[in-house]
Image (cartoon, each protein chain N blue to C red):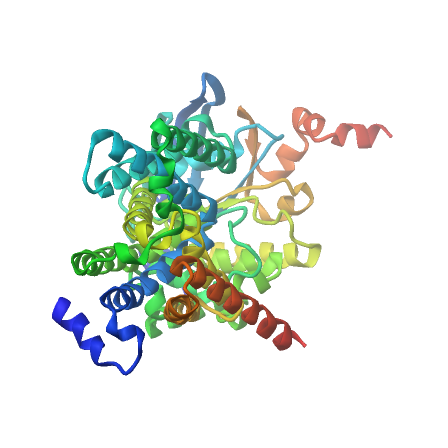
Length: 279
Length: 258
């Protein structure tokens, strides 16, 4: 893997000399299409707020990792986000309260708990890089894992894509076609958790959800069917990922946030295209 | 699509007496509240049975029990003669009251058929055979031109006919319609009823419909069931419409008094 990445060093650009930039570029190219594919489902099934909660819940996962003395908090991150995701779905089934209320209170709870855990002894600043993300956190070893995640989660999402969409449209309709919504929901939630937590350290807790939502939201303005929707979202995610990363290098800004701003630019561009087409 | 359903080959419509759904003494309790109590119904092929009743009468719960979504006491038996379903797992077509999507969703009618009838991931495209099946199903409900429209651009009546076409792909043993005409304008309603009525004879379907549309159902239904937690009365439309409790529940007796 690292030899492959080193090939990029041959590119005639200043940034290509730095290992962290080469790693980041490969990570962005790997992960963007997966974010886009997942985003199309998240947006269609109105789960944007849900995935936002999963991102913010990582504060608690991080806090638990520190409390348990883990060298790499990834396990506690995934663990807590899974518990929260399943918890939200279960709580909604039991109380039948509206989904946004449940998500909002779960999110408040996990952010508060995370801040309490991480601020013990006045050390919160040590973890603030998780909020905005840090490119240096991507190592060649991570890229191997990202590759595996993209293959497994991406393949799983494609395989279950039809079912997840149908369940989002109407639960009873899905059931009349022999689908069990609970398990499909669980798989979907687990894949959101995997993708969000694995990319948290370089994108940042505050904005990771925008990376999921923006390409899909922009693609909706252009597409007339699901295939175009997914393809547009992937193209927009890749463009804004690569452009945002390079801009952040030259402007010396946080990469995750820069990528989000570029994606936002694409969103407004698609809005304009849509408005022009209407005329 | 063939003119008559394969599981009735050689049997004239209205003659396959064996083919029916038995709902025997079912009750559903949610949070200790009885929602429906001791409901028994027999649904026959080629017959449209309409369930009417006030809000909270348990009409939708009855459908959800048939779909296996809520647990119930009592028994539901299906007796398909031939066809895609088994007695314990009949093929049920279901037309929901509404779909959860927003108007600008890039989700086309062809996509709807693809996600419902195929496992081939729809982001990779909509296969030709699915498009063909969808098109012929849509033509059955006078909606052939809607294949590539997005759901958000359909009128209420068009969407309902698309959902009807979907519920008939493949042709089910039992068709459930949950308030299919609410939110549809009058011409749309007439077209929907005409289509359902036509399909019932063509495929010899057994149909259970929940409706509030008292004006429309009398002409289209073979039987009406007045449900208010239990079956208050059931029979041919003329009989039920003359029932005193029925007329009282829907305020028809007041109209006469005026």
